[in-house]
Length: 287
Image (cartoon, rainbow, N blue to C red; front, side, top):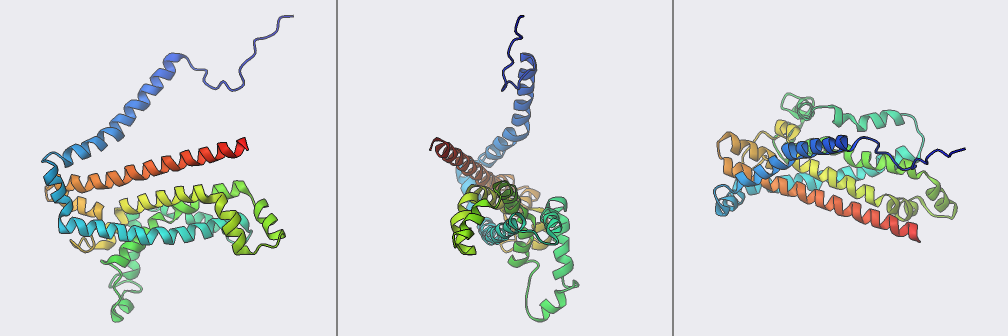
């Protein structure tokens, strides 16, 4: 009795060659048209009037103030989100408690709420006619139209990134390693630093990178709470908008190109981390 031909177990591509080529071509065209072409256009427009004009735009006092404020907001927001993300992921994946599902839902809230709405929420709370505004004014505390308001808005829109990167990873890993460490006499902190943290380090780094990229590029929420005070409360995205509205196109694209370079740097670091992670996993399997 003739045997049926064996089908390769790992064969998943069964479409005709022309279908695969067509899908690949469509993907490449989409990538070039909606990603690569705009990215190239930013750098072309930034350098249209020469390198000297490009660097003059970046050395402008208002541009330097915007760059500094962007870095300050990211430098404060990312560590805060790091602490929250690790704490929330650890609590959700390692313990059972009432309100756990509610906490998971609240972590996703910034993904479903418009950043502009988030900014308006802070205006409602800290504005001159808001819930806490009069009390803050009496005590000389300024939140809106200053660095604290920008930091608060940045923290709100970025706090899910680290937690959302860690929760699936820590859920998959389970609690066996932690239980073994505790049974051997390790304390909670020792278990975290020597067991949990090494197991999640790559996911943690990915989350920090994504959080930092989002913090530096945030526009909507920051635009509402900043007041657009030149040289004081404008971040890089806001400074780009102001320059563009004033028809200073070369300067606007120069600052935008700096944001694009920061994004490309983030992407490069993320790719390098993924390569290191893959290399480490391969080494672990070999041994």
